[in-house]
Length: 210
View 1 (spheres, rainbow, N blue to C red):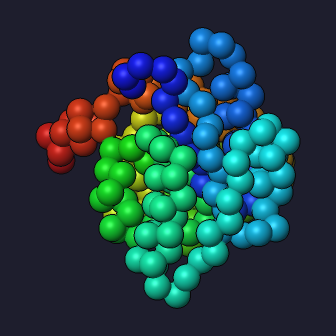
View 2: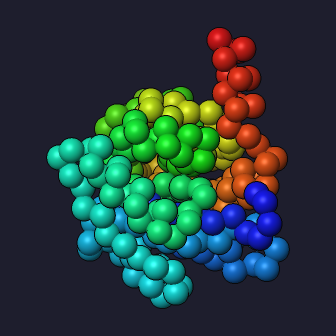
View 3: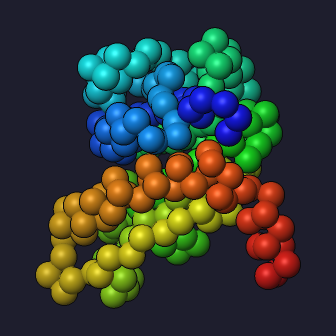
């Protein structure tokens, strides 16, 4: 981050509770980032209303059958707002490779499990918590990671753990994980935009560990 606060674009598809956590964090005068634009692939996403209430520009970029076209249109919006970082917050589309390459090392995502467990294509939202409960796992949590072309496989920035209780339902486990998500994501963003955590360093460390 050079001069001023880092400029974040937040991509959303749903209610936007993680977006709200980020917006709340940015109100602190010493927080090193600000949300400059919120983009959804769904015009009815409540997250767009959260952005408007916070005075942040909100845009809809509808999904396309041509993912590359979607990536180009999305990049145009981000460029118009001079976004430096991209944060996925309940964004349910897989970003096209061209877009990921364009923002290499500058895209973050939060996933509701302890990756690499319960990640990959088709694993999102309640599906993740259902799989955790069905597996008999005694622990779950959430992961903030850099986004790469491989779904949910980018270098891990931070994780938070929660117990899986014997009487848990999808709803109770999801609520416990979400509480940690809302704490972890703003802190992970802080670490990344201030250079405490770097994509290239994490990627190199993971390569050496293989």
